[in-house]
Length: 153
Image 1 (cartoon, rainbow, N blue to C red):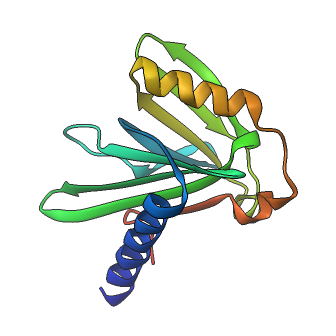
Image 2 (cartoon, rainbow, N blue to C red; image 1 turned 60 degrees about the vertical axis):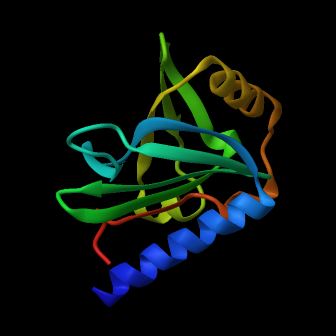
Image 3 (cartoon, rainbow, N blue to C red; image 1 turned 135 degrees about the vertical axis):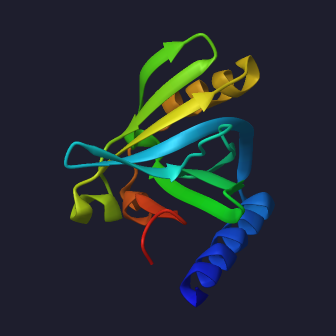
């Protein structure tokens, strides 16, 4: 339980740090899933309503942070990806499906990530502009980080 609390505190600290130092791209409902050996594992997800996800940009990374309640428990999810490794898989109406190529810490685990976002036009336009304008960076090793209350501590 102490590990879980320290992880939540670390995620809250990163959230506050992003509020002060990063560009807030927007807040949207969505889900984040880790894909490992053709199986899907939740990072940000809920059985009832898609959680709110705050998206921040701090060169060269996009950060996805979410806090929600599930079955009476406080849950969190955090993911940090190099912008150059995030690709649009599908855009259908207000929904946007993104895929994240392995990089940084993800390479060691050989995992992929899928991100489903329920967007609004202004958010989608800003996100597309970031994905188009950002090229590869040597600082990508600082990205490719995933943490969640769903993952074992």
